[in-house]
Image (tube, rainbow, N blue to C red; front, side):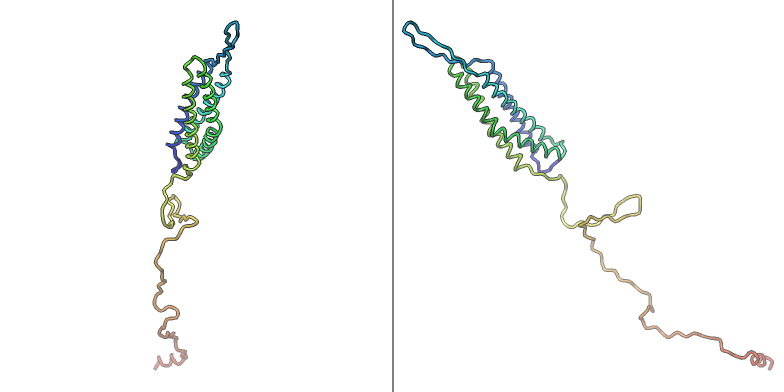
Length: 235
């Protein structure tokens, strides 16, 4: 888990994209089911004639339908990105994908949805049907999607730092002894600082080299003639 990553913001914005995409999808289905037409009156001296001109609303509804599917995909990606159970590498990849999708949604798809629903609303307003207000509501949805896509891309780009969820300690590191079954081994990191130890002095026993010592004498047996010693014993 990345400590500075905005998991909650990703989940919330993804859910909002998903809701807006579903609403746009429903309105697009309505666009397929209705017929947009215009009645034109042709003046004739003999009688009044009218012609009915049908607009290609199915083609426009297909455009808004594709836009809605894209927005739904953006929402699903945002929700997946906001899952805290993702690994760090997956979170970084999903953040990049979510950033690209939201930028495209703001620059291309939301503007295309605004255009499609506006055209359908104007065409339906020319008929006797009162369904046109649904398409103008779709225009409002696409405007909200445009703003939300900008916010989502900003969060993905600028407000979601990458960092490990670890506790940082202040000050230099100290060598630690590894507790294993083998004799203790001192393990130090490359930038570790050895702990402060008091100076050590070597203590020598008395009369070491360089110290003043009393003179030493070696006793030897005197060289006496054995015959003289024997004569002295007989006397």
